[in-house]
Length: 182
Image 1 (cartoon, rainbow, N blue to C red):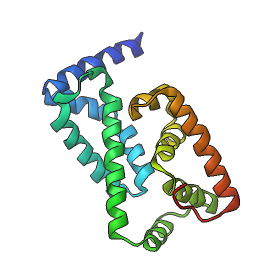
Image 2 (cartoon, rainbow, N blue to C red; image 1 turned 135 degrees about the vertical axis):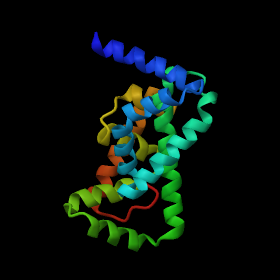
Image 3 (cartoon, one colour; image 1 turned 120 degrees about the vertical axis):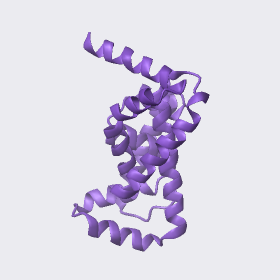
């Protein structure tokens, strides 16, 4: 019963937020701040950039809140905005910093196993359609229906991308080949 009540309160907050209620908007974002941060971090692997992208996401969501036609889909909509902001930041990074510098900086910032670095490097170089579903499924433990809502595509498409993405990831990690446009 408690989960249902919390869900109803969240929907009410979403409706109020979409109508311009700042407190309701803040409450909703606060409820999901940890999840939003972990998604941003899983894309950017940098606390400062993840926090910057979160701030940008909240600003974009606030500015476009009135355009959301289905307030009950507020959280998937917010996550979709976050993913778009993360992708924008990744594109900006590619224009600004040579790839070799990124690898060195990330390796120095955190002591992790070679296999984890291989996995993160392989994910970073995959096509976004595969990377998005894999990150949401395996880093964020989301279900196929949740991913479908966030990415605004059919569940069958999500399942196909998960299957194909895992297959490509497995091939690239096993061969340790060069990964371009996987």
